[in-house]
Length: 315
Image (cartoon, rainbow, N blue to C red; front, side, top):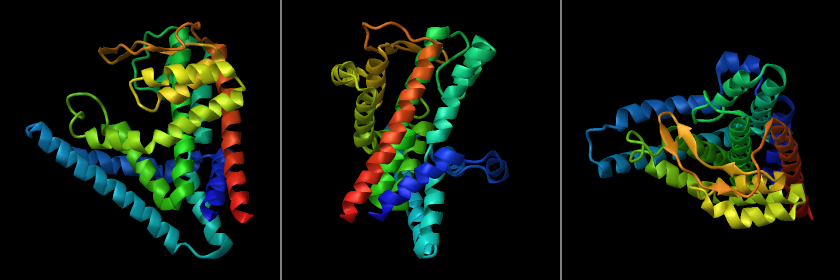
């Protein structure tokens, strides 16, 4: 029960102040600290000369070790902080560093602001900071589509899932989830270097996001108040190559009456993805603002849900 209120407080702290630039310049960010560890262990363990099965096994052991390590660090912090309100406040402060409600909004809003102020080249540059696909030749609909997709998917990865696992298991659950998600983003790729070594990380991330992604899609449909969003999510979510990303993305597509996903380029490779809400038109720059407005309502709804569950435990 206490974990619910801690995560609510952590969300409030992150939404108000985020991770301050001054702190980031001085000490970096916890996710980047963990990313440094992932990078070093991958270089040591991912030997291309080994067989595929050996690389899967090695990557799996590395993944499980790093996730367990993250969870134990979270547990140690939780146990070592002082008891009482001060300790709870410090735990909430630590938790806020692993929630991305404010930073996600700012990064996506930067794409919309670039369109409004300096034009499409600046919008491409802002987009390149939040997506892995090639952005140099994207037109306005493709930029808007990529930004909205990133917002929808990362609402689950950066907000709903951290709150979900933190509310269930406190800092150990939150730290373990962020470790899984970071591992997937760094080594869970379908290419020659990572496909085998990162397979366990990718599957573990799929499992960890199974409930949060569907919860996020449901929150999008609820906050949109749109029967169309429910219809599109129910029909199209499973078309996505990811077992999870299709739920928030299709809900967003239905809520805004736009189409998302579709073919995209990653470097020199083209990925032929099916359309979500294929019968709708392409988004434009204004739709990024509409998506952000819906996103903010979802964050508020998530906060209210945490509060309601917290009060229910008190009754």
